[in-house]
Length: 156
Image 1: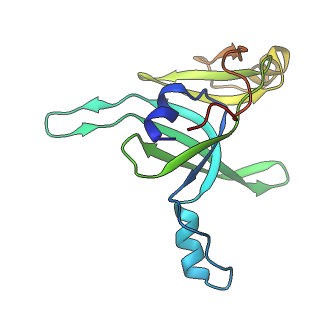
Image 2: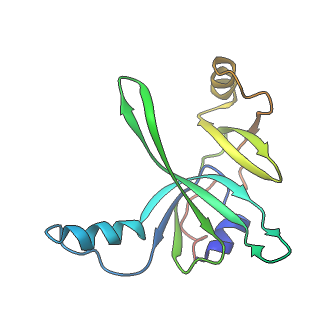
Image 3: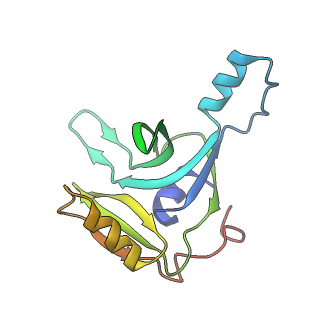
């Protein structure tokens, strides 16, 4: 599946895998493995930004995957996200879609949208939003049956 299809049709909250279609090197080749991991991995789709046209350059639409959180004792000290333009040469696959009935807390950022939290239901999303401060522009969207479903049959 291309990056532009991810941007156009995959809902926020989906787990997306990305790959350059090269085989994984053996663990003993640490440098090769590290380079391979830069272009092969997965993350949860958390943001979509439309493209922009500047006088000297055209920026393609982008989407961002949340890769990991690092920390300890309940405190996150580092969040790793990766942003892809729709013009990237990587291939993508939807590994998991959010389920119908789940709810996501989202906020608009400029012309784009960012998912802050994916909850099991609307009540859990409302409780999460009530416990956080600083998200005055956030609102809750429930996952519809059309957005939900298995990744099989929808992946190219």
